[in-house]
Image (cartoon, rainbow, N blue to C red; front, side, top):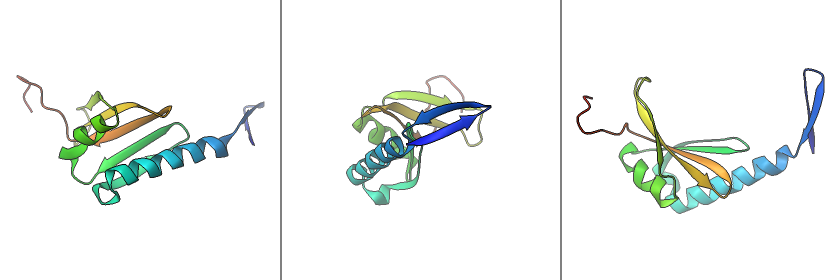
Length: 106
């Protein structure tokens, strides 16, 4: 158990347990996807973000885990889409190339 102290108030959280759960799910996702297909992994106690080597495979990878909610980030350079969903109680984001919408210029 780790005690956090912020601005004079105390809050306790089982940080080791939640990070351990995120780590275990990350390992399972990587085993299912294949380590060679993922370039970068970041995770916190409640979120995992995967960056595939080939961003054109991202949507397929994401949908395989039920991550079917796209968040389009067009203001960033380069733009990208994050496919998101909840897997075993944790938010999972998988970065992809930006989606193309019919009638919208690139």
